[in-house]
Length: 356
Ligand code: ADP
Ligand code: MG
Image (tube, rainbow, N blue to C red):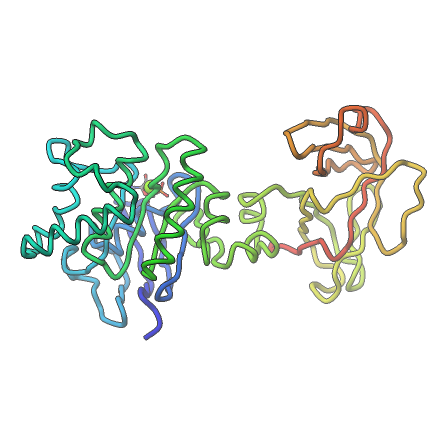
């Protein structure tokens, strides 16, 4: 069996509210899968169902092919790391990390060796005797991680573990968690609402919206081939253009204009929504001759914002669209000025047809 976890038609109702709609999901052995989505989309509910902290309304959960739907949480061998650390404040670091082993009645010699090894892995050797309140947030979460890995669970789940940390520390800890995943080779199910964290860390991302999977795929697939509007707008920035197919490779858009789109995606007359990423949109001066193979619209710069390495420019086109282009920043004298007339162009191959 190659699936560490398989969910079949799993759902959870709280009264009339579906926290999770009937969902199928397979997590492969050894993979780093991230549940990504806005607050309230059902991420924690899905983790709690896998962990056994709550029971499903419908469906079956398989762990390595065995039905664990009704198995008590402790017997599942699934480790959990929480956003708020959930450490025991009156216990030392050593005792916090030793806790799962004591609960499993491991011999004390084994406990000592395993706790020290876990602390070593998270860079906390020498902190055994401290209490949680004598540690920074990042160190407390390292204790939380050590307590999870100490008994070698078959699956490690983390629910927004870096949510309480500031940006620099978060990025550093992302790297450490990835390293840990590689060293341990364990299946990880990771929850975040931060798309950059998900793109950076995951083998696959399961993007959730209102209790259902919006798209499941690699970071590349979600970014370059979003299947619907929600995914296109949640991951990165996007320009959305709606229109109607004329033949099989042109689309009529606002203001009696038309643009070329990749062929074979839809037939004549179909109403479509297509997306192009801002970094694939190029600005050219109004008199620059444009190659026929490229889509071009003329317009006026509506706004320009300098965000360090990148500059984001919005263009109001003559046919009534507002498009965003993103480019590597130049010095201020070379940046587009609001009111200036420009052409915006992009290649048809950079357009993605979304499900309507
Ligand atoms: P996320 O972790 O993505 O923020 P949750 O899984 O916590 O989302 O919640 C999904 C939905 O289920 C939300 O609408 C939330 O209000 C609801 N919900 C979660 N837990 C409970 C509960 N114990 N009782 C009632 N509603 C709940
Ligand atoms: Mg949550």
